[in-house]
Structure formats: C-alpha cells, structure tokens
Length: 355
Image 1 (tube, rainbow, N blue to C red):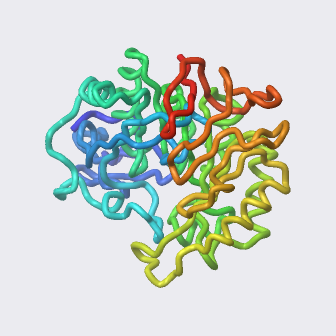
Image 2 (tube, rainbow, N blue to C red; image 1 turned 60 degrees about the horizontal axis):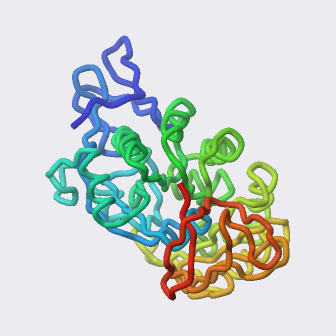
C-alpha cells in the first residue's frame, strides 16, 4: 500500500480522486470504482502498488505495437481492477477482481525488482498492461524511472481514460503507448464501457501532438455494436486529422466473454473491410489482430508499397528495413522507433534496436 497522487480532500472529509474523469468521492475506508484506490486518513492510497497478477515475457507485437522495436521481447505485468466497466472485457478475470481477492500476489515488488526481472529475461522494454495501468500509475511511474535509469524503455497499454494533469505526469515517463479506442460514439462508450468518449480522444490528441511518446491505436471490433462501415470511416478520419497518417491503427477481433457471451466472434472479413476503409482515407499503417491474416499483419512501405516487415501472428518472419527504419528498396523512413544495432528475428533475419 502506497500513498497516491492526484486527489483533493474536501471540507466534509471526503476525498476526491482526481486521477480520471470518474471523479470518485470517497468516504474513509471506501474504494473507488477501480477497486484499488482507497480513502484512508484524508488521502488516497494505492492498494495495487507493488503487487502484480504476474509477469511474462511477450513479443512487443502482442501489445500490440508493430512500430516499436519490432521483433523484441517486452516484460509485461499488471495488477487488478479497472476504471472502466466494459461489458465485453477480454481480461475481466483481473480487471474485475478486487484487491482483497487471491488474484494478486501478496509479495511486494519494488521498481528495482521489476527492472531486474526484465534484465534477467533479456527484455529491452517493460510494459504496463493486462489491466489499465492508469489506476496504478504511481507504481508504473516509479518502475519507469528505474527502467530509464538502467537503459530500458517503457510501454503503457491503456484505454486513455485519465485527467489532463495525471496524463501529463504519466506520459512524461513513457516511451510508447497503445491506446484502446473502443468505439467512436458517445452512446457506445456510455452503454458498454460506463465511461465517455471525449477524454479518450483528448488523450490520443495529446499523445500525438504534444509528446514524443510513440503511439498506436487499437479498436476492438464487436459485431453489431461498433462495426458499421460509416463508424469505421469516421474513426479513421479522426485519427488522420487529429493524430496523423503515420499512426498505426489495429482492428482486432472480439470473442464472446464476460457479459457478452451471446455476441458472436468478429469475422475476419469484417476486419479486412475495416482495414480497407482506413487505408482508403489515407492511413499508412493499418493492421488486423486476433485473426490469422498475413497481409493484415504486414508493414508496407508508404513510399514504394514493398512489404518491409512480414509477420505471422506475433512472430516477425521477414525484416527489410535498414538502420533507422528505412525501406531497403526505396529508402523511405518508416514511422516508428527503430534503431541501429542488429537483433535476430524468429527466422534469422536482422532487425535493429537503437538506444
């Protein structure tokens, strides 16, 4: 348990959590919507600090990040709880678990412990993921500081539902982010996530226009709810106009889970159609996920259209970029974070990891 940031003590003794737009007003001993931020002694404490549901070495492509040091591994971990209430949550077993349950390890990991794990696993980066790290941002920031001190990079996987002040403090310490844009209507957000669209769009625009954080966007496509072609087009146009044509966009497949067991899985053809729409509006890098689609998982050079990174699921099978992420055929620089030191891919091709 650790003292939290981002709160105000009110005259009536209640504590206002100012981390996210949910603005929970808490009486002594009461936890917020996320389960892991509690009013105690006139302040907020983080029950999740130092306690993880587990650590894993993942391909960076699994976050998903396709333009952030492709072919490398990332140490991934999370806690419990969430500040959204998505009825379709694909990680509901931890996002809806409470701190008092047995899901989260009782042993406490210091920031140094976490970075040691990454170094020992040969991971050049650390991802705050699985559940939304916004709700345990204090721990993520402290781990990120230690990671940077020791030459590792940091990845924040989030729904982007966070207030401006906390947003600035969090992303000051992050190298990359993947943000879930769960739909593109306020009605969808209100009914199916118990949150609002506008703060998420503010986070996305902030990342693209005011930071150096490498950002990719994921849209989980749910049949009958947010898969209409016109919504896909509006979403893609917004990314083009407010973030830029080089921001990678991932359309991923839903599978029946949590409170949406009666909704069918997303057909691959729906993702293929969404990708086509996004490319038609001018986005350079559009991907499909949670389905086997070699073309939809390949990075193409926007200059000559050559396939420069070929993937099979999360495995990099071919890599045709030179130092600095330039296309070997035409020399076009691919948007992203690529480096100059060679790293072996799954089939022996050479990738590059920079400082």
